[in-house]
Amino acid sequence: MRNTTLQPEWPAGLADPSGRRAAKPRQTGLTMVLDKGLGLNAFEDLLSLSGDYIDIVKLGFGTSPLYPLPVIRQKIELAAARGIVVIPGGTLLEAAVKLDVVPGFFRQVLALRFNGIEVSDGTIHLERGQRSELIREAKSYGLQVFTEYGKKQPGSRIDFADFAGVAEQDLACGADLVTVEARESGLGVGLFDEKGDCREEDLHYIRKTLPNLERILWEAPLKDQQVALLKALGSEVNLGNVPFQDVLALEAMRRGLRSDTFELQRAPYSDYMI
Image (cartoon, rainbow, N blue to C red; front, side, top):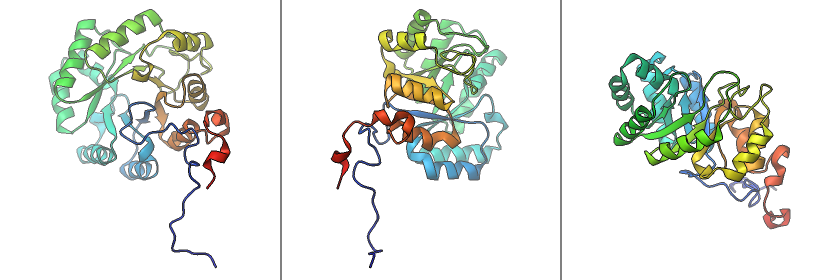
């Protein structure tokens, strides 16, 4: 007769055959989810299922002022309880710069208890001095800062010499991570070509020459992009703009629990037997 009083457990090691995944708060292997307008019930469902595998939630674009205030406050509170950083999209700060309302932007960010922001210039031109000033101001308020490199226009490529310089200066000003732009579509911007495929020569250059890869987050909304980056840079690569419905699938790929990245499993199967 089956003993139903015991708490069932998977065999040791089977949950993470890679042997590399750390519990939160993680320093590497971060997953950023793009929230384009989830309702509160759907958001709670997302956190109850996948909260352990999400490190950052970005409220996409400039959607934050469109939320009813009680809803956005509750979203931030629910995420913070799970150790998740919530940030408004960088486009919102770009709009604040253009409209000359940056002090009001920061006042509301702090009032709503966001715990981070994104500093970007994907749509506007931001002078280096102003970019540095925004990073330092946000850090002075105790916010985490995620900067973004790259333009949103189709066909935009990574200028690696410029990227290395921008990233170095951003990090020196206190940025926590530097994100490489790919948009929500993942098509024809940054590291990805018009079909969404990784530009292999760019990926090779990244792997060989760029320092501080653990401080870089790659927007990679499509599965094949995530697979390519995981295989090239390892299971602890930081990935962003992940659709909320793909969080569990991405975590499975990080751990070698999907055929696409089965090779990421580190130890022989026998080591996991109990």
